[in-house]
Length: 173
Image (tube, rainbow, N blue to C red; front, side):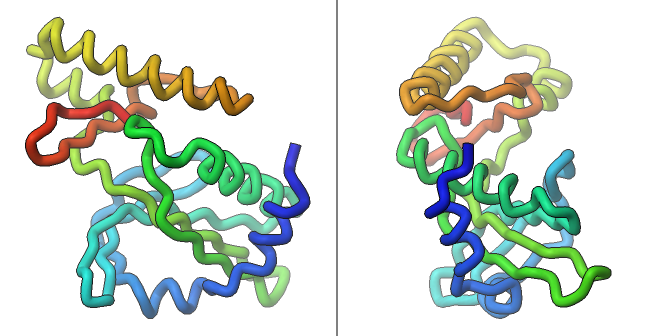
């Protein structure tokens, strides 16, 4: 179910794709590619020089607004939990012709470690304490999204990202 206000907010977004390219430098490092888009490393062109992940989604069919509005609604609803990737900003452009693709870019927290699947492949010496902590993180995130009447339908190790904040253990997001 897509709330009308989310759809309207997406369509009326004042931050265009052009504005995105003026405010962010897209690195040549593609972090991930999936069904709904690609994720790139980006750095702010502003004074902060903040490093983030940019999830770029392009669509040329009618359901694009509903997909984007749903993602925006979900991020807005579950934001603020330590085990959920933060959404910082959204940029949007509708397409100019039937041959152009509409674009939406979600600026998200960069989880600078591998996803859990890659981590298990490359560092197979994961200990029981880390495993226990990560499962607590996963359960905490799922409890939070379920409390907000949202169901994650694609839980798998490659969708669990590892994040390290200085002075803390690696968090699962």
